[in-house]
Image (cartoon, rainbow, N blue to C red; front, side):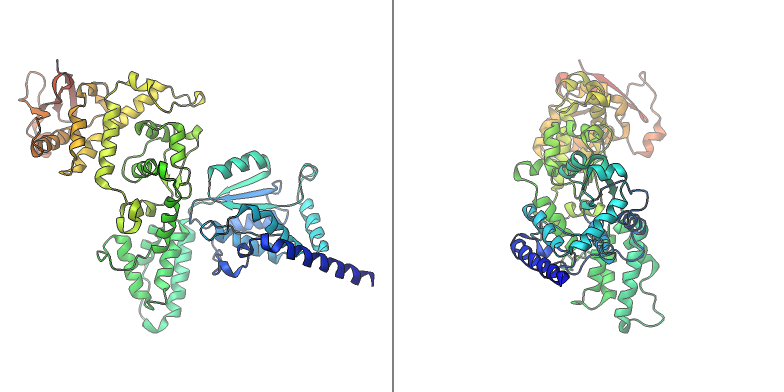
Length: 535
């Protein structure tokens, strides 16, 4: 009789708590919420090691048993939600799940004020006895010191590597948190693609002959290579191929392969990556308008120019530490961004090349598409701005100087930036072709070419020769005063290796660049280059 009273009392409390918390809870964010269908979940055989280790940890075993929390972090589309969903189902199966919430800003499930009320509501669905057994089991999996210091609960956090989350985990959890960065996994992608294409063939068996090999190995390898370990890329292609609105996976796969090869010329055709592009668009749309132009300048550099350490890139583009990181604040989902202490040695890079493709295709990225002429001229202007100074003068005006512990003094940093500019500015100019704006010619005309003597070891002789040829043509096209003056070779200075220049179809070996006291004479002997400032 007493037991029945207790059950009835507990049930009444539950009804009250549930009724009070319901309006303040994220009901659509639950593990099996209908709003989240189709539910993401790891395909059997993928992410196997991680799922196994996490399961052992949840059961109080394995090599991570001393941790109270686990943080699974990774870029957009790497499969974090699928892993978290799979772990939630495993925990539920073993009667270990206290609560599960899947937050999503794009789906309106991101109100952090409702986070703990949502957890409380889900816990209210569990009986006191069940919660007690859970607490006892989790305490048994902790070390003695853990029991004395912390609550007997395990937490699994899954997110992108946003800086504020990384800071919070470091500050609040410190050594109690197991941190797992989810990598791009090519082998799992191949299994994923093979499995779903096999299922697609079975679903549409009536359009295939028994002898027909579909898909062929070449198609699979192309899709795996294009996905490059990014699950959302592979998943988006599979959904396009399986789209019931078309009902023709053979034709859809042909379109996918044409898209990958870049041979799809008809812009009216469906974009196999439309769903992925929508996510990319959402990411860039979150960037605040005051910093958007700076963000795009940085993205441009990652997409089109040779890499260099983050701190050097910032100084080349005349960005301070604060402006650099402010411009990239919303880009952690798609860009690997080194922390301040790693900025002197690590460069920015996209997690996946599809984001670069997105930015360079105006039909996909719309207002965020890269203007190639503007891109090239901005880079050229930045390089000539830096090269117009000596290593010593540039070192005094660096907007971002390395921390003392980095052991990178301003002079060395200045040298690195100037060397990079000297190596790559010529090709950027040549790439403009006949599309060079008048303002860029103004920048070149006002440049002090005598400064090149300080970085001549970094300059490619063939590249600067091609630059001189290009510049000569452009000044003539724009009816400007010549900036290049070709001169006869003085054989007393050196002997030209004629066969080397014949290969490059070059006739001249000596020319002057610039005007007045800013001019310099360039002497070339095959791949060797000499620079003499004009007096």
